[in-house]
Image 1 (tube, rainbow, N blue to C red):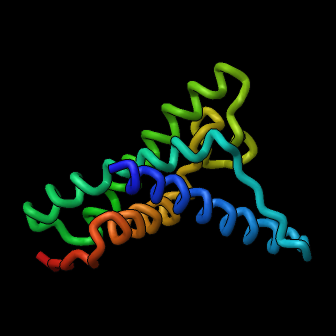
Image 2 (image 1 turned 60 degrees about the vertical axis):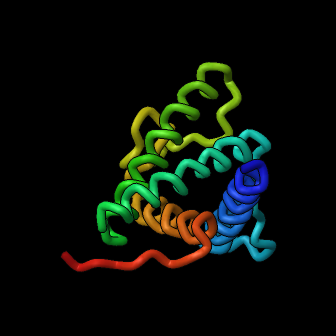
Length: 136
Protein backbone atom coordinates (compact mmCIF):
# COMPACT_ATOMS: atom_id res chain seq x y z
CA UNK A 1 0.00 0.00 0.00
CA UNK A 2 2.85 2.41 0.81
CA UNK A 3 4.42 1.63 -2.56
CA UNK A 4 1.17 2.52 -4.38
CA UNK A 5 0.75 5.68 -2.30
CA UNK A 6 4.27 6.79 -3.26
CA UNK A 7 3.67 5.80 -6.88
CA UNK A 8 0.50 7.93 -7.01
CA UNK A 9 2.27 10.93 -5.50
CA UNK A 10 5.20 10.66 -7.90
CA UNK A 11 2.92 10.10 -10.88
CA UNK A 12 0.97 13.23 -9.98
CA UNK A 13 4.12 15.27 -9.63
CA UNK A 14 5.34 14.07 -13.03
CA UNK A 15 2.00 14.82 -14.68
CA UNK A 16 2.01 18.30 -13.14
CA UNK A 17 5.55 19.03 -14.27
CA UNK A 18 4.61 17.93 -17.79
CA UNK A 19 1.35 19.95 -17.72
CA UNK A 20 2.97 23.16 -16.45
CA UNK A 21 5.79 22.68 -18.94
CA UNK A 22 3.21 22.56 -21.75
CA UNK A 23 1.72 25.76 -20.33
CA UNK A 24 5.14 27.36 -20.55
CA UNK A 25 5.44 26.28 -24.19
CA UNK A 26 2.12 27.93 -24.96
CA UNK A 27 3.47 31.12 -23.35
CA UNK A 28 6.54 30.89 -25.63
CA UNK A 29 8.91 30.03 -22.77
CA UNK A 30 11.73 28.27 -24.61
CA UNK A 31 13.00 26.85 -21.31
CA UNK A 32 9.68 24.98 -20.85
CA UNK A 33 9.76 25.94 -17.19
CA UNK A 34 7.66 23.66 -14.96
CA UNK A 35 6.65 23.93 -11.34
CA UNK A 36 4.96 22.06 -8.54
CA UNK A 37 4.83 22.10 -4.75
CA UNK A 38 5.61 19.69 -1.95
CA UNK A 39 1.95 20.06 -0.94
CA UNK A 40 0.96 18.37 -4.18
CA UNK A 41 2.58 15.04 -3.34
CA UNK A 42 0.10 13.95 -0.65
CA UNK A 43 -2.76 15.42 -2.66
CA UNK A 44 -1.86 13.38 -5.74
CA UNK A 45 -1.16 10.34 -3.56
CA UNK A 46 -4.82 10.30 -2.50
CA UNK A 47 -5.47 8.87 -5.96
CA UNK A 48 -4.77 5.52 -4.30
CA UNK A 49 -8.54 5.42 -3.66
CA UNK A 50 -9.03 4.83 -7.40
CA UNK A 51 -7.90 1.19 -7.08
CA UNK A 52 -10.77 -0.09 -4.89
CA UNK A 53 -13.18 2.23 -6.66
CA UNK A 54 -12.08 0.78 -10.01
CA UNK A 55 -12.64 -2.78 -8.80
CA UNK A 56 -16.13 -1.84 -7.63
CA UNK A 57 -17.01 -0.02 -10.85
CA UNK A 58 -15.76 -2.91 -12.95
CA UNK A 59 -17.77 -5.45 -10.93
CA UNK A 60 -20.79 -3.39 -11.91
CA UNK A 61 -19.71 -3.43 -15.57
CA UNK A 62 -19.15 0.32 -15.86
CA UNK A 63 -17.48 1.46 -19.07
CA UNK A 64 -14.46 3.76 -19.33
CA UNK A 65 -16.61 6.86 -19.93
CA UNK A 66 -18.48 6.25 -16.69
CA UNK A 67 -15.28 5.45 -14.77
CA UNK A 68 -13.42 8.46 -16.18
CA UNK A 69 -16.33 10.73 -15.26
CA UNK A 70 -16.40 9.29 -11.74
CA UNK A 71 -12.66 9.75 -11.30
CA UNK A 72 -12.81 13.34 -12.60
CA UNK A 73 -15.55 14.16 -10.08
CA UNK A 74 -13.49 12.57 -7.29
CA UNK A 75 -10.44 14.58 -8.34
CA UNK A 76 -12.49 17.80 -8.45
CA UNK A 77 -13.79 17.09 -4.94
CA UNK A 78 -10.28 16.39 -3.65
CA UNK A 79 -8.90 19.49 -5.37
CA UNK A 80 -11.70 21.63 -3.94
CA UNK A 81 -11.36 20.34 -0.38
CA UNK A 82 -7.57 20.47 -0.25
CA UNK A 83 -7.39 23.78 -2.13
CA UNK A 84 -9.89 25.40 0.21
CA UNK A 85 -8.06 24.11 3.30
CA UNK A 86 -4.67 25.25 2.00
CA UNK A 87 -6.07 28.61 0.87
CA UNK A 88 -7.37 29.29 4.42
CA UNK A 89 -3.81 28.79 5.67
CA UNK A 90 -2.30 30.94 2.91
CA UNK A 91 -0.36 28.09 1.33
CA UNK A 92 -2.41 26.92 -1.65
CA UNK A 93 0.07 26.43 -4.52
CA UNK A 94 -2.52 27.15 -7.21
CA UNK A 95 -4.94 29.98 -7.90
CA UNK A 96 -7.48 29.68 -10.68
CA UNK A 97 -9.26 32.95 -9.90
CA UNK A 98 -8.32 34.31 -13.34
CA UNK A 99 -10.07 31.46 -15.19
CA UNK A 100 -13.66 31.91 -16.38
CA UNK A 101 -14.70 28.45 -15.24
CA UNK A 102 -13.21 28.59 -11.74
CA UNK A 103 -15.01 27.80 -8.51
CA UNK A 104 -13.65 29.80 -5.58
CA UNK A 105 -10.29 29.94 -7.35
CA UNK A 106 -9.47 26.35 -6.38
CA UNK A 107 -10.93 24.30 -9.23
CA UNK A 108 -11.31 24.87 -12.96
CA UNK A 109 -14.19 23.12 -14.66
CA UNK A 110 -12.41 23.35 -18.02
CA UNK A 111 -9.82 20.93 -16.60
CA UNK A 112 -12.42 18.16 -16.71
CA UNK A 113 -10.80 16.40 -19.73
CA UNK A 114 -7.40 16.46 -17.99
CA UNK A 115 -8.81 15.00 -14.75
CA UNK A 116 -10.86 12.43 -16.71
CA UNK A 117 -7.66 11.27 -18.42
CA UNK A 118 -5.58 11.43 -15.24
CA UNK A 119 -8.12 9.24 -13.44
CA UNK A 120 -7.91 6.58 -16.14
CA UNK A 121 -4.10 6.79 -16.09
CA UNK A 122 -4.14 6.22 -12.32
CA UNK A 123 -6.54 3.30 -12.83
CA UNK A 124 -4.11 1.71 -15.28
CA UNK A 125 -1.14 2.25 -12.98
CA UNK A 126 -2.92 0.98 -9.87
CA UNK A 127 -4.63 -2.05 -11.40
CA UNK A 128 -1.84 -2.93 -13.81
CA UNK A 129 -4.25 -3.49 -16.66
CA UNK A 130 -6.58 -1.73 -19.00
CA UNK A 131 -10.14 -2.27 -17.85
CA UNK A 132 -12.62 -3.66 -20.32
CA UNK A 133 -14.81 -1.09 -21.99
CA UNK A 134 -18.45 -2.04 -22.31
CA UNK A 135 -20.68 -0.12 -24.64
CA UNK A 136 -23.92 -0.93 -22.84
